[in-house]
Length: 518
Image (cartoon, rainbow, N blue to C red):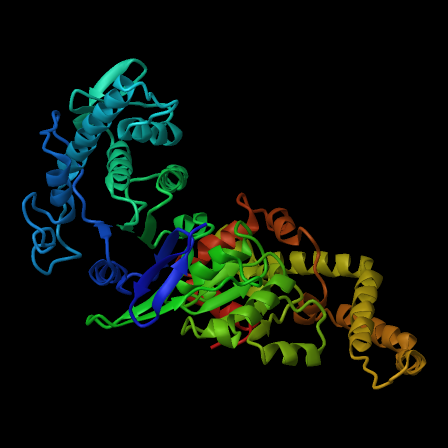
């Protein structure tokens, strides 16, 4: 692959194999940066986001040079881009050059066919000779195979199920596909093509295929995409990514080249960089009930689910790495389940912006007393009796699974003590001796007895809050539905309540079991 170079403000020349993707939050000056690139690099065609898509039924053909000048300069007889951008309105001028683009295509095809005829007349007929129209059709067929593109007799039409319709009747997606394909193919080799909002009017699947095919047919051109569509940004796998953080309105930006990072998926990296909110990574999936609960409680944060505790820890650490931190100005924090963590472990995580719930697992947040009572009250049930039923059931289940709980806590405690092992031995036998001594100091029976006593006390005292800190009965949230007599699933009832007039009451109750992260 050939290395290309594009000049950027502040960071200078940046190399890429063929394409660049500029991403940034709204208001960060991405379009103005595109205009800067056009002014400060040689041979640049900028396709504005403000583009008209009207196509006349019949194209007025002028020679290719005049048509290209109309596209490039905004005037068929001038060589000053001020005509195109209305003398200083580079990001707001509506560009209406569709007819010029198609005129250039038809004009070039005429020249190509003339060259082909001359070769044939000389007996030098090439084995393969593709005109620009044929190339446009080939790209079109890869992107919109269900529609046939017809470019003939200086007209653009499409055919669907044998029915022919004129360009003016094409959908916005069809018209923008034709415009972008034709615009890029008529641009001379060695040009930089800056495309502002390459995703406009395009479905995600079409958008990826379209630009993949255009790049394939334009190997000697460099593409600079300006987008806020993260799906599109991540689809350009080999592109050099540029993060546009801010713009002062006077040709000065905060710009960073995004380096590959093995610890952070690119899509997530761009999502975090593209927000203006602090970030909170949490356990769970995108469809779990606890995610909308977290979003309501931590409304000032962009809450991102990470499946499991390990992933929350990894991503929180990665985003707080000094090198990554230099790309954003937001707080990035993690929130994990208690899961029998020792106090020393929780303190260690806290120093890394990772907080811990005051219940064993996030599902237990739905089981706190105020929420159960509110749900019962919704159906006119006696809230105290309803809560007592749930409490009785939970303690009954806890009694039955008592030694499973004791076992889990003991193993967690022993594992923690083993993880604290260290040795300064210089020989294998020295390290072995240190390990043996370390293990001998772990009194498993004492740990078991103390844990069993603690769990027995919680059950005997019916300490509901402490119970939520050590016991989780899988599916219990769903069981509450039947115990209380709800028609709708209990977790959904809670989510409905938190979005209504009970919001403040529910959040206040939840905060008693959540760490203070602000």
